[in-house]
Image 1 (spheres, rainbow, N blue to C red):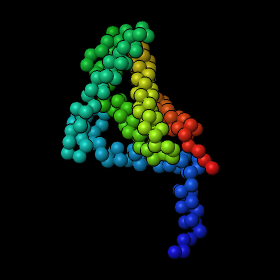
Image 2 (cartoon, rainbow, N blue to C red):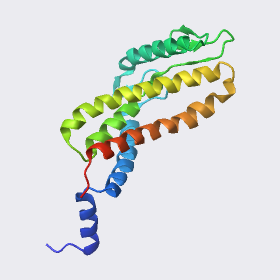
Image 3 (cartoon, one colour):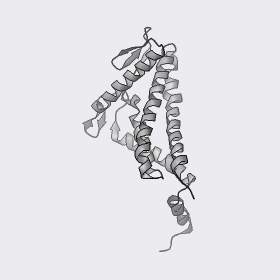
Image 4 (cartoon, helix red, strand yellow):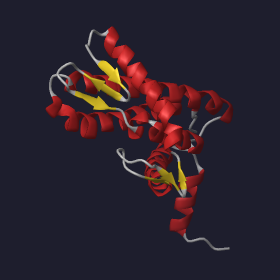
Length: 191
C-alpha cells in the first residue's frame, strides 16, 4: 500500500510520543470532552431537571452540592467570614452571597481531567493512583475557588460575574493543565 508522504508524517506524529503530540492531544481531548458533556447533559446551572437522555440525573449531584456547600461554609467560618449556610446558599448578614448549584460541583472538570489522563501517554499503573489524587486536587481547588468568590461577593457583589464567569473559570482549566503538565513531567518519557 502506497501512503502519501504527508499522511506518513501525520501517522508518525500520532504514533510517536512527543510533547507536541501530547499538547495536541490535550487540546483535542479537552474540546471533544466538552462537546461530549454538552451532548450528554441537558440543562443549565439553574435548571432542574438535569437530563442525561431521558433520565433526570439532578439527584446524583445533590450529595456533592451538599458536601461542597458544607465545606465552603466551614472554610469561610475558619477564616472569620460571617456566612450563614441556608440550604445551598452561603449568605452574609447583609444578604449578599451565592447559591451553589450543580454546575459548581466540578464534576464536569473531573470528567474532563479523567478522560484527559486516560488518553495521555504514560504507565497505566500510575494513572490508577494519579487520577483519583487529581480528583481530590480538583475538588480542593474548586472549594478554594468558590470560597474566594463568596468572600469577595460578601462586600462586592458586583465582582461575581467577572470572578465566576471569567477569571476563576479559566483558572480552573489552567489548574487542569498544570496537573496534566505534572503528569507529563513525572511519568511520560520521550525518546
